[in-house]
Image 1 (cartoon, rainbow, N blue to C red):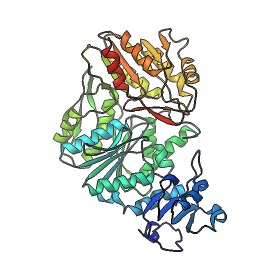
Image 2: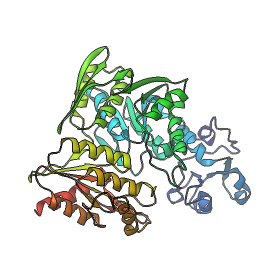
Image 3: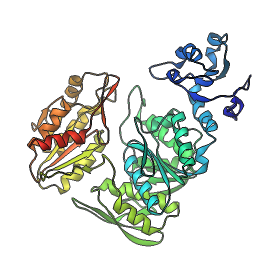
Image 4: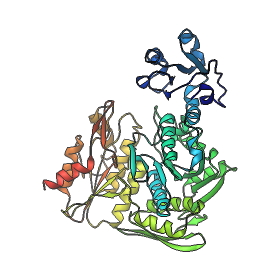
Length: 484
């Protein structure tokens, strides 16, 4: 594609209109006739890799304009802008011919519930006969075909638009995407043609030097989605959901709730160890909803999905049947076994999400609630003792262990966690090695108990240092069960 088309409507001056084969911000991937975009990241500055990219065949480079004098003598086409990262989303859309204009795009943001709600929307739409793409924390799909596992909630702009092009070419009529606060902050979704946006809730998470400086910054970044959508769907039982509606008067909002007044309000909520049921008005009729994921959070997630699909014109029968059938990897996922033990994988990795899952299982479990969890390294350290306190208060026994320590020492992380449970209860143990911790949990479990392995959910890896090592939590549980 010609540079003039790639930089259409960006304000960037193209001095020589050459043909570009591909765009990348990773110098290791550069080949002949590529455009290399130098991005200043949290840890690395892409400008330091420009000469390497040129040596590998880059025909053009996009740089921050204040760096022009450093590279003006290179024998390539040089393009400049104030901030290359902010422009990446737009040029990615241009390069892939605006694929999100070829399907209806649903964006889902919030602290909790994004993954489950996105799977619910996908399942409902597929029940109605539609071809659906999904981009999210677990993986990216076209229908049942997995395109790739995900290492972040929302991919970088170039990867995202390339995936959208694949989805459009495959005939997807709808794409459902989890939209992280970071993706909105860093412009990864700039240029996307959203039809509907959903706000699930907001609670403390992602406050760190590499993410958000404050809860206000975290919230305001999420709110950016609702400057990009035609219709917003909002949980008004959440305080920040109510604030969002007031902040964006030009957005057409649809509201849902259990307790406050809203357009889509659940009534007769009933939660058992197998089902969540409630009534809600869909397309003018009072309907009974049944979902095989127990918990009040399931009511909220499904109300969000219902609100989206009703707005998209889906018939009630498909909404009801889709929610009956939906299953979400690593979200309240029970591990089938022949030992009669109840073992659940869940992605809960914040104070609020851990409280939600433990409160839910405690309400219907006859025996003990055994909770195993850790906290990630190089992330908000303030939540470590808070999560321990929650587990100490709600679980009958807690196993503190490791979870993606990254560049921190695992022993230091678990010490931070343990500080929050001391004085709350003595019913806990610290086992730094997560495999040993899983084995301990399985061995101590009895029929009637529930073991909640929190934090990893669908993840298939453990991050130590800067390296991802394979880590299949479900398989480690099955291995431990086989030794009983």
